[in-house]
Image (tube, rainbow, N blue to C red; front, top):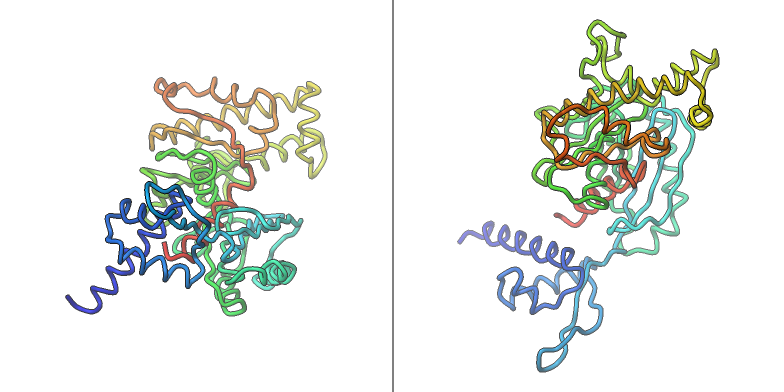
Length: 376
C-alpha cells in the first residue's frame, strides 16, 4: 500500500469517528469501535488525536457492563466560534455561534452596503466587538459565512439587484485580514440548511424565502441542490404574468414583482400615497379591515400559490417552509395559501410557516463553517 493511501484511509477514518461522536453526542471508545467497525487500536489512536486537537472532550464515565466504567467522549462545542452574516439590501445581521449552533452574540444593523469597503468595515468592527468571546476558545474565530441576496455559485456572486461590488474582493479581503476561510452563499440556500439541520429534518425539503425578493433553497435526498451554475431555486424569476412588469434580471412579469414583501408594501404605499410604508403599519391596517390592505394580501396569496405549484410539480418535496413576515405574523395566512393551491396531490405535501424566521439563514451559515473547520 502506498503512503498516500495510508494517509487517505486515516483521514477517512478520522472523519468517520468524529461524525459518529457528533451524531451520538456522547459515546465511549468501545461503542465507537462497534459503530464504525474499526478496531480498538485505531479508535484509541484517532480519539487521542482528536483530543490533542481539542475537537473532542472526555466527559466522565458511562455505564459499565462489567469491569471499569468507560470514559465517554463528546464534541468540544466550544473549540471555536463561527460568524454568520446576513448581508441584506437594507440591513446586516451578525451571529457568533459555537460549533453546535449555540448563539453567543447576535446583532442586526440598519445599513446599506454599497461597497466592499463598507461591508468589510462593518464585519471587522463586529469581530472586534467579539474579541473577548473569541479569546475564550482554543481556536477563536474559525470561519465566516455570508448570505447574499442573489445568485451565488462557487463562492462568487453572479447576479443581484442589491449589490454592485465584486464579492471575491470581499472574500479575499476578509480572509487576508482574519486568517480564516470565508464562504459566500445564497441566502435561501443557507435558510434551507438551517431549517433542515435545526427545525425539520426532512430529506426532501424546500425553504421559500419571501422578502425583498423570492428565492427557494432546495434539499433533495438530504443534499443541497444548486443546479449546474447555482441558479436552482430562483423561483422569484419564473414568469407569473406574461409581458408584465419589467424585472432587473431582464425578463418581464417575474413572480417577485407581484408577491415579495417589498412589492406588497410598495403597492400598498402607492395606494395610500405614502413612501416607505412599514410592515407594522400594513399589518395594523390589514387587521383593522382596510380594503386596500385586504386586496393586497389576496394578490399575494394568488401569486405565491403560482410559485408553490411550480415548486411542487418540479421537485415533489415532502415539506415546503415559507419564511416571511406575511406568513408568520398575518393571522390565517397559511390557511389562505393552502386553500389557494389547486394541485390535486398537495394533500401529501406539508406547507408551513418557518419557526426560525431570519435565524434560519444564520444557523445554516454557522453549520457550513463548523463542518468546514472540523474537516467534515
